Image 1 (cartoon, rainbow, N blue to C red):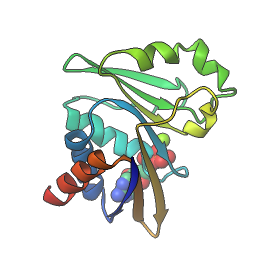
Image 2 (cartoon, rainbow, N blue to C red):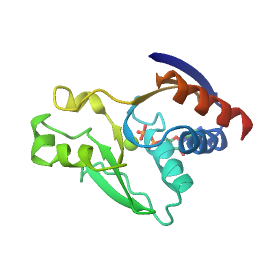
Image 3 (cartoon, rainbow, N blue to C red):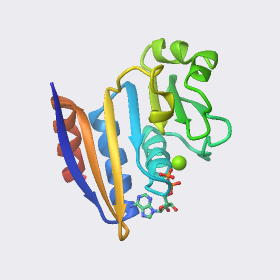
Length: 155
Ligand code: ADP
Ligand code: MG
């Protein structure tokens, strides 16, 4: 069952809170981050990786398309498909192997560029930024959304 959760972020601190709630509410799977340039997709990913325990830099994979991480022995991949020419390139990159890895977390910016190759997401976050206020629409399994919502307001 799919549902929606709407959150309002008024500061980067709120974005950090959302990242923590995502760690607490969502485990492994495929995540789509949708939003214009500057919406805050990479920033959210940075806080997410840090909340998972990553120390050190989080580079935007604008040119490399994917940046791999290993956090507590878990494979985590941050994709930015903005510059993907053709969804088929994802096949050549071995996206299937990434998806099939046990317990892997894939966070994908610009998933629309991979349409036709990328499977459906387990969790989708749509970020709309207006006057520095970010509205985030989270969709996914109801129980996951409930956990994310609970953690967000508790943090
Ligand atoms: P995208 O990856 O969607 O293109 P970025 O994360 O690279 O966007 O850029 C977002 C910019 O907005 C950053 O400079 C960040 O510091 C700024 N920003 C301001 N407030 C927020 C917020 N609440 N959440 C995320 N980014 C924010
Ligand atoms: Mg980005």
